[in-house]
Image 1 (tube, rainbow, N blue to C red):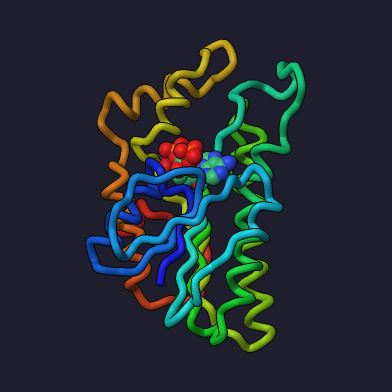
Image 2 (spheres, helix red, strand yellow):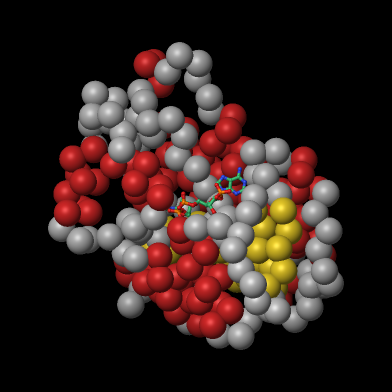
Length: 232
Ligand code: NAP
């Protein structure tokens, strides 16, 4: 059974399409969706309100449970000192607090902790400060650390879940459109992202989701941090 967040578009939607194509049962969580499939169940939830996670009512979680925390936002693309009111809350809530609360809630319902896989979708920006993406970089760095800490804590308890923080590469989604639509006055990396698109260097959401599923099919080596650019 798979639980995937942010299934309305982009990478999350492609992951669900791929999983349903493989006849897997999927619970999608987010604000909206367009799936019509007997193997798909939707739970409505706005990640900008972390309390809404506690109100989710899950069907019984059976067999191996894989939670894919994919929903994410970039936030305002502007240097911090140029923002009229600094809004870190929204990005940190959607990208860090809500996925971690969801992990906490789902994991508590998993009977056999060795029958659990966590995938937190991170970013290369977790390890590289990008001017005008402060909240996003900080959120993905925090997510990486929470992911790894969770893994080590469970090992201490002699549980053996599979745990990944995955940088998915640059994917041709609305998030990239948002990046390329930034004002060059506010964003020094704008040209780099435009060049990647012009040179056709972006993964399609389908390619990225196929690589993710390939990673999940591989034996877990204890390497929590993964980059889909290295999986083919
Ligand atoms: P996207 O096309 O912008 O889609 C984002 C998804 O997150 C949508 O389904 C969106 O749902 C959902 N979401 C956003 N805010 C939400 C909220 N408050 N509550 C519930 N769901 C919410 O982005 P993407 O490119 O597919 O990104 C997916 C993940 O990959 C993100 O974690 C992102 O940080 C990461 N990533 C992407 C790239 C890239 O190049 N695209 C690179 C590195 C990492 P709504 O339709 O309801 O807004």
